Image 1 (cartoon, one colour):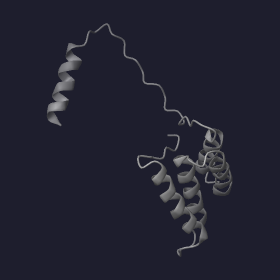
Image 2 (cartoon, rainbow, N blue to C red):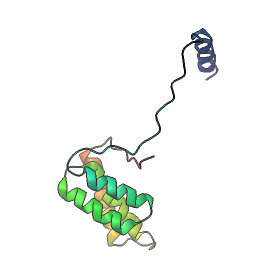
Image 3 (cartoon, one colour):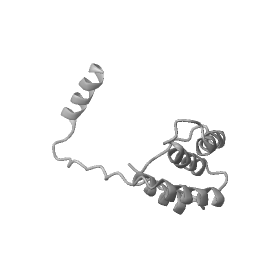
Image 4 (cartoon, helix red, strand yellow):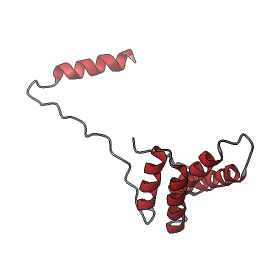
Amino acid sequence: MLAGTVLLLALAAQAPASTPAVAAPPPTAPAYVGPAAPNLAAGVEAMRHRRFTAARAEFEKAVAADPQSAAAAFYLGYARYKLGEPSRRMNPDKQQARELFAKAFSLDPTFTPTWGK
């Protein structure tokens, strides 16, 4: 770590003084692609506002539009889990969530959710 810091300081000292700093663009919501994209975006937005029933409806539309979408399966599973979360026991929502999570990762083992940060 110390070597990396020293290298960064050395490179910064060699940079020409006349080069203006370029600001990084602000973070944006993830860009979803495919037929499920509008529903994925709407569902994630609903999730961010803790509207899990509305999110579930959007994600169900996303799964119907693109059954091979790992994102659609994962987010539908997460919405179903959140709807079943008040119960400490396994219930139909949690059972469905488990199946959807498994489906998502079988479709794309490298899938990582993005929440529009």
